[in-house]
Image 1 (cartoon, rainbow over the protein chains, first blue to last red):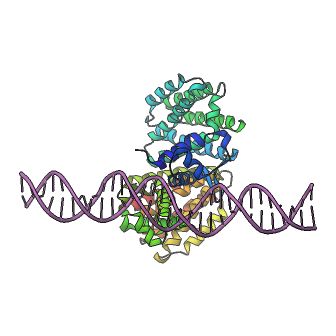
Image 2 (spheres, protein in one colour):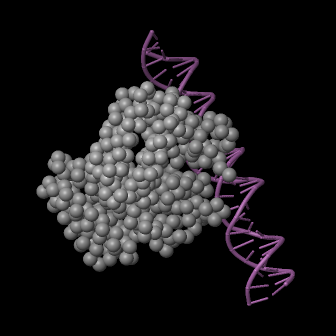
Image 3 (cartoon, rainbow over the protein chains, first blue to last red):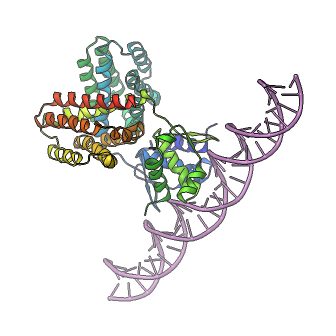
Length: 208
Length: 208
DNA sequence: GCCCCCACGATTGCATGCAATGAGTATACA
DNA sequence: TGTATACTCATTGCATGCAATCGTGGGGGC
């Protein structure tokens, strides 16, 4: 039931854009088409969508360039996450509307996913943790924009990040701090914890 | 130099999506293609991009539906604007980094654009006023997401809105209040003024 | 009169063809 | 050896063709 375009889109996003070796490289439509087994048309469409998200750059007569994320862009990404996530905390915590039970469960799920062999799932749950908070605000448009940041983060090297020794534990600790502040109903503390988490993530990303 | 796709994209966004009579209606690729004078391929690509922004819905075997914005979505849109614009004010005002001169000039430009005959330009300057604040933060990713909200606003009926008697004057007054608070260095007052502006916009949109 | 079913037509989604364009390279020349 | 130049070929951007699929209307049955 998945169309060729969707296959191409998913393939590129999950298997090509995340490859650190390919950063900055060019892809030709034909090349991808041959690899996926469809014609250039759906590939073109997928590339167009990725270009709209600034994940690739369509260069005439050259191909699609996998845009490397600069340190500046990573910083901007984290700033944007901060804006959204702090807003979510400020909205939800005072009214006791934060999804504490779900967050607790996600934290537990994440805890048992230690080791590089679970890196991908660890990251998925990590995103779910934050996205759950944002989604609880109940603003679909906000959630959509927030979710759109995810692929950027993956490109920013989050995958490599979670393979670093000790980083998973640090993430768990930081998530616990966020959850604790939320559970206590302390919105300001939650914001501080979120900022700490994003700062620490940013530092690791910029260092790597 | 503009490609067929860009022509189609611009045409649809500016001349079709903004037409209140077409809300909820369907467009066929061939129909648009004939009208613009290109083949279906670039039209498809343009529609795909619009669908990625949720401005149209691609329904198989039916065509592209111009998604009508619900009251809920308009509310969400204004909430999102609030998050971003308040953040901009909080970031810029305390450090005196707000672009007061530019905002003042934009306000003046807007003042002389009274009457329905200037509605389009009035709206353009209106967006520029807010976008200038956001852009001054210096976060390109933030600006990009904020700009992406613009076409939604147009669809929400901002055009009709500015044709209402007295609305332009009200907008000017509200913008003056925002600018005054910024100029005085009072971030909290700026946020309050922004909230007031968005609330008032929302009310008019939902009533219309 | 009402409902169901079938066949037609319209529409999408993809494959393919083709011309225009520019990147990359080999070559000639200083 | 370094540089300018012309040429080749890959690549895009768009047009067109074609099959699959679904909406839709008309005719038949109840």
